[in-house]
Image (tube, rainbow, N blue to C red; front, side, top):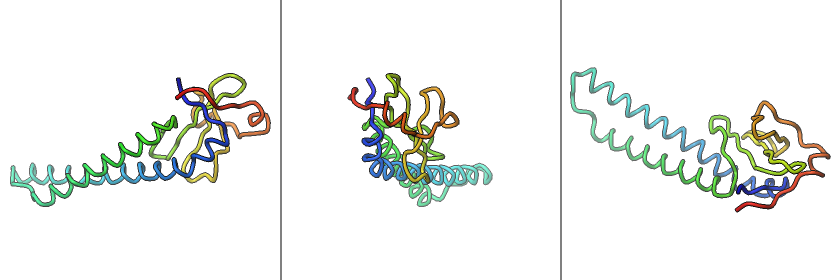
Length: 146
């Protein structure tokens, strides 16, 4: 059973979640850079007819890649462990499950926004976001799960 957050609970957790999310985004970028460097080494070996790669560079790239993968997994595990859903690392999009008028919906946040100010249906996605208004505040609830 999922954990359901009140808006207040989500806002209280947001600073910690944001820190982990930023770490995940940065780790993913580092992972992609290391992968690109390793691919370039492979291309060089192929282009040179099987010449031995720069072993020191390969080891550095592998260590960077392994470290970034570990950081990415650790950050995502921490966020998911709270019951928060990571939807899109490219845009830093996350959702906090909540109940609104007895049905599950999601409090929605994207990095760069100043606070949790939107919600959407479970199958509505980012494009189906609605602003949090007085009716939502009065008729949503957390609790359950975990």
